[in-house]
Image (cartoon, rainbow, N blue to C red; front, side, top):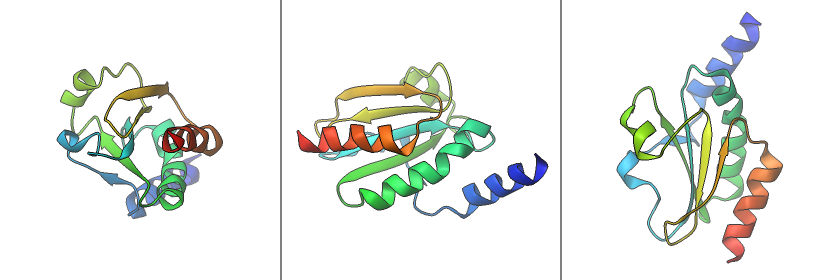
Length: 120
């Protein structure tokens, strides 16, 4: 278990695709946006890193994928109404929240929601 934890920590530290944006920049203007609110020390949040990385690569230039660490930005818990981490919030191009998920979200439902938003 300790080895898995170390590997996940290393994956999180080495990821350059998923970025921590300024919370005031979310949602990204005129772009479908997904914000993942979590913490670098949360196990389910660490499990999201490969999913977020894959989504950023797959939707580069089409959708913004943003990570906000709520332990570093605790005010965002209230701003986004977070009850559990990780939480993924999907925004359409107009900045309207259209879907919210609490907990780990696998790549398939993640991409299905992005495809739906991009089709509109």
